[in-house]
Length: 208
Image (cartoon, rainbow, N blue to C red; front, side, top):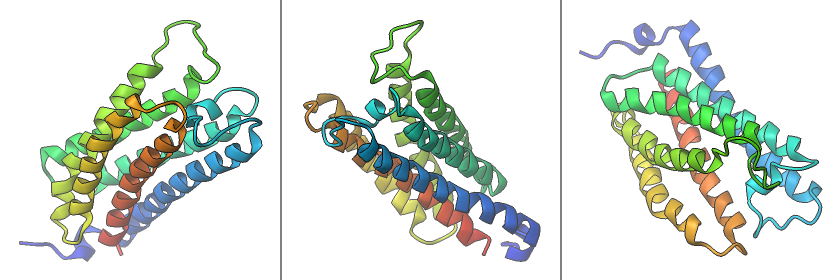
């Protein structure tokens, strides 16, 4: 038997979910805007050829770092709400833990600065972080799709579509010529942000 929404999601919980859902979207916006600003501010930067990682090193690295940390916080916000509104199922459990791990990976990518400036000091883990991010970015939406679909609406199907799109798109990045990989990386970033926004919209819809 389905419980009334008022019982499942009382007013206090609705405010919590709404605030974190809105921030999840805001974090994506901050990330995108920081990249756009850096594209104009960083001298001799080619946004088609140069990757976001190139913007995250050097004199103006703080611009993109702000966006990276904001996006990491958006992933944490999504994970918190996913745990709060857990519909049951191992896939959802894996997905919300995956969101938290993704947040840690994104944070480490920004904090380690092992890119762009060719930093080789200490243990260089950037490439391993990228691989882990790539795998989780496929598994997280796929794992959460069934739970999202239980509530009706298109969110479950959108998550599956985003996982499939990532699966066919992400590996291509490693084979692209350096003249266009910056533009392609931004496309992959849009897929990642679309997952967060989809989840945030689902969370907000559940507690309206």
